[in-house]
Image 1 (tube, helix red, strand yellow):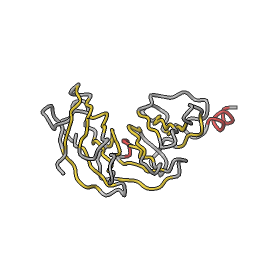
Image 2: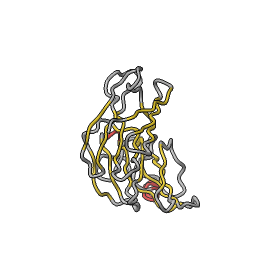
Image 3: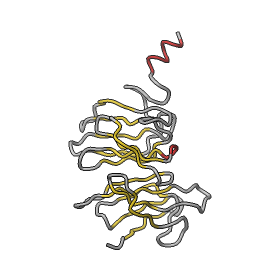
Image 4: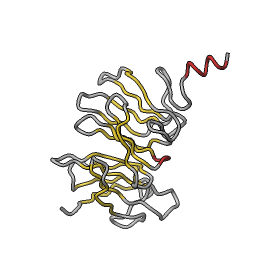
Length: 196
């Protein structure tokens, strides 16, 4: 009997239609209005897709480290082409999928990604925060990445002073050079303007 129940549920951490969320961490929308929920901070490690009216379409992912598997999804963002960028913090990478969940590529070399966003403008970029722990003065920088995966640069460090960051959990980057950065540790939001 247990084998039948486990088979009906799906792979460990995947969640299935009708499942409850387990500490979802982020949400994004594509140009058609479809909603994507990053359900990966608890025991589920998946992306759930809904129509713009809130009807469940599908979910993908499960706990693990292979392509399409996740370990603590912290953030999700969509680009203008409908690609989804998923901050897979536990695996120290950002995975890229199409809107149906097909794996396209991964971006590494950006520390432990937490908050991510895609900038507007003629040449959009991905911005990703490198998570620092609650008591850590290590890491804390923000990476600027081309949508091809090439890291353009990074700025900031952990701390409490201006242009220093303490557990960045949200980034708004509607333009390429003006960011709003939300920090848990410092209980603040900073506006950061990058030099052109």
